[in-house]
Image 1 (cartoon, rainbow, N blue to C red):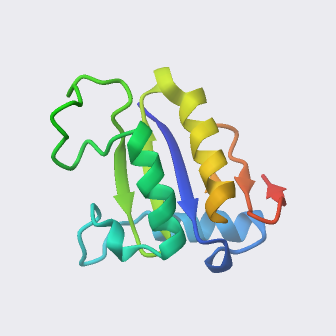
Image 2: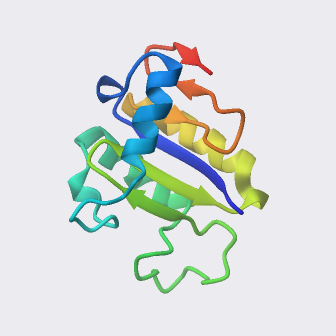
Length: 130
């Protein structure tokens, strides 16, 4: 079991919680014909978010840099879509992962969904919902 978060383009996401959950389900079906490890498929703001996230939480699905231990508890499992980036972390780093992801979501003006936490959705304009 993992601790999961999803960064998303807020202008693509519904603003009502039930509609958002339906949209989330659609986004995470992962039935597209593209490589879900390719950050260039995402928007510029999501690419920025991802680029900084992998500095602290390297993508376990890509070749690791020589100085990264394959047993590092910070390794994370990313799935990259056009409008979302879903990421799974080990529970031992859940708090650190949330804080980092939220700070970067604010920096890059993307939304953040606390999938495994309390289900709260954070929008760049400061509005939250659950």
